[in-house]
Length: 148
View 1: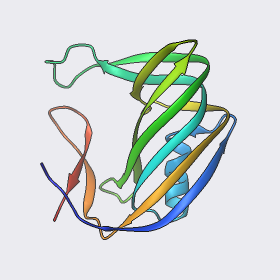
View 2 (view 1 turned 90 degrees about the vertical axis):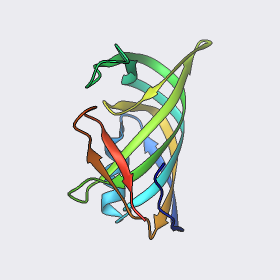
View 3 (view 1 turned 45 degrees about the vertical axis):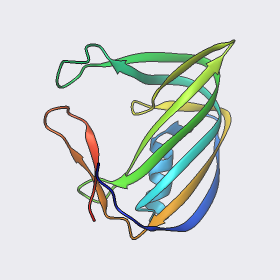
């Protein structure tokens, strides 16, 4: 386990509108507001896109992602972490659960999902954190690397 200790900074409440694409719109917001590290909490509606629902074969490296298309309005609750890549760009790693008609899909939004009518996000900024997202050659993932 690796960690970095910090303090909370600003808190933002954001209304996403119909068609706003995640994670792109929150990464752009973070960049515009100079949020380097933070936590995202999300509730609302998702209308379309694709979520990563696991690797096809757990033992295969780098893993081939399984993508599940989302078509039609779904309720969503999600949580994620913002941290910069090696160039300083804020990258949001966000997972969520999407529900519709008694069925739930849980996955990563890395390939993009779009807001259906409205979603609400809270970003809690972290200060004094030392962590970067670095590409891991074995998995192909961009992993969070905290430093003390």
